[in-house]
Image (cartoon, rainbow, N blue to C red; front, top):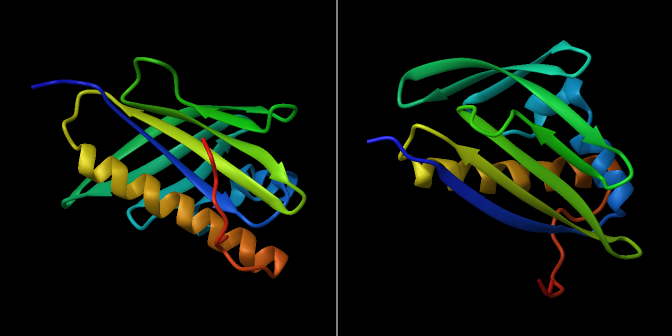
Length: 145
């Protein structure tokens, strides 16, 4: 059975939005914070090659990446491809931001895998930002959405 799975997650980060977006858009170092089983190489100016492994099966896909610096949004893939998504960094307050991400997987029924990968990706991003900016990777405050 073939269907589309959409997963959305948010993650607060105790760092300015621009600093978070700088780490998120460093296309040469995405593998440093993406979950295990996903390796990324920059294949061209706006093109990434991903090696995605799950359950002993590996897939190689290429995705175009669009970075909107003004909105602090990155989009990869295209609607209707096997895997696409967006992530945006929003400013909450000085030294506080939130990352909102959504992925779409087509021709799959692996919602739990997508949820786990996105959760680990956002945690990995927060850890990478914390290491680069010497702060805690989490914030104990409340984020209202």
